[in-house]
Length: 525
Image (cartoon, rainbow, N blue to C red):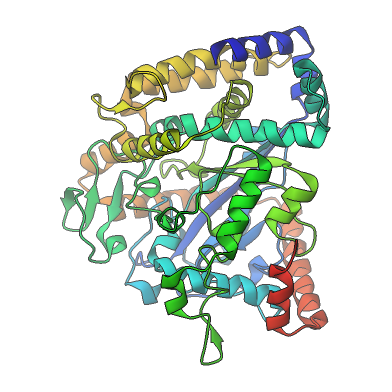
């Protein structure tokens, strides 16, 4: 792996790295629960002034009517991303009354399953499909798990980069195939080394007991209302949080060894019926409970730390878009919201993630086998639950197990020339500085967001809920002053109005029954 990485870096350094890398694009999606002043999840519908959650490009909802999702367009650098995200927050706050945007990944006070309103998207066939899909998630996994929030980081490189990189590699496939398979190499390495993201950026070491909803847990109590992990980094990414494991129980495993294998295995999961879901029923007494009784209703039900993406055209299925046009970008999904930061993420963190994903692309990335797949899952779970434990040892394929800190030191050392590559032609050594910041967090676990959150709780004597609520109130004040500039307010206001017009047009032009709409959607090949 080291020799492959060294060779590729040497070729890039000898080319024009600044020119080749300047065309890369980044994107952010930040989820945030709307919370009532008393700390309970909001029961108020998605505010009309924010626009249509179905058609607005920047302000939508995820699982719940109360779970906002802010989406930036693809932009050329982390500063531009955070500027855009900041503007969205400043537009939203004056339009949600006295509510708060919850500062953490793990949710606020929940009064059971029924307290979580499922997102609504209007009367169009597409809107109904999105709502029924979420209804199916409730029947399959429960609503509570679905209101965990996160940050998704999108990353792509330019066509100029891919053409030059393909020439350097001496590859003779089509550019589309070369790009897709290179992105899949990146994805495999991200999964191999993704535990490092949980260690460095995990920020969910504690959880409100209302989230557990009476379920037994081995987590110790912080007080009567909070459970936590002494060395936990990301309960969100552990078995306490997302629990989408049905595809493993059923014997269907999504394969990342190539784009065709990925499409085939994911398609199989969306076409294979699963007895427990058959028992739920699909259409009961004339009302849909789920889109179908298959292992996955649609591709997006499969939760993974990174997805290959190709923007769909019209109502195209994600796998069809990938099959036709290949991978356009990758979406990293394992980043917690940092409750200590108003935007939930920092510019230095985004620079590190850029460097880390470029490293994952350039390093050798052999195919997975079943043993390595198991090790990857075990390493992620161990890091999520006990990542800051100095005694934690991680598994590696065909080589001895290694303490997390030692393996992380190896990776961060290999990131140094990647950061130098990204710093070439730019003012300052911003990527090297971002790497140095994370080296310090590796050397001193108390610098990590998870440790800082627990330290704040201990110092204040406040449990997770009270601490996160105070941070939410603090962040609200941050976004209220100064208010959003008038020009940008007008921009988002017009976008909201336009989104409502687009939703009404969709509803007015539907000419199929919903049953026929679903049949045609799932029949795509």
